[in-house]
Image: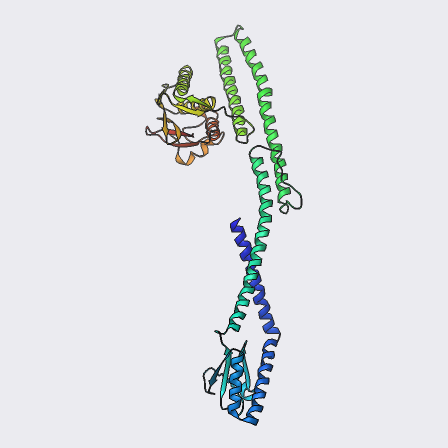
Length: 437
């Protein structure tokens, strides 16, 4: 608002000055200098009087009268010669013709009598009358500036109130209150911006409602036929089938399990995404022994890796964590995040996955390293997006649904933490979760 105020104030002041300059230029060009003509008539009258005094009482009396006139009017009287450089040809012609030449406000040349001497009259800047006149001019300009400043402040205050109302509606909407709308009352709206915001909010609210309906459809409508297919597969297994048919049934079972896992990941990600809008999962924060929690998590992950079919060697998962290590967090979601990272690392690790926990300056740091192929630096931000895959060794053949890291990112964000992907010392990928107190 300070910047807006300065721009408004400077713009208003600059526009006013431009108008003053344009007006003065137009008046000077199109209209005669009436003020100068009045002053010329005034001084011409003085010269006429001096001519009469000189004729009746002599030049010395006229000079004394001129000196007194200059003193009483706080003017400086300066004698000059006709060959003075300040006297231009135009001024000389006017003096010879009229006895008076006007320079600018209260600045004159004059001559009288035998016209052997030229006098220059100019204001005495040290005199109080001219200082007061200058002070009045300064006060006038300061009054203009103060008025502009006050007007700018009032306008900015009015705009700030309207902006603040729109900002509150925007923040409420961003935090999950999808019924929040900006006021469209004439005293509150900013042109058509409030109306456009409300139109946008209606559209987004409809999209989020559609998103929730889609999630519910996945949770119920899609799971029901999957369950029926699994039941039918179980019935087929009890039938008299050949070994080749049994292998087909086993393959279908694997595909159905993968589809079930994908649906679960999709639902979990949808809930986590709505949590960022205060409309999904709410954290259950408690003081937890992180060493005990992660020891159980790592053990479960190691067991699942051993039971899963693999073409090569199953990587070992090692945990390094001080015990006890008490921290306030949501145990279920942090365990889910670490499990996702371990499963993701297991698809690319050659032989080892290391989970390290440290406490650093008011933050809990959980670090997962693998010795696999790593993630290119240019792709580390992109892999946090749902369903994104790197066009290298990390492709569909390596497994996964592309949601694991996205879910981890959402969990860390809900804990007001930070997720960083970098290089591991073993040559693979290092994922660092930093959870503040």
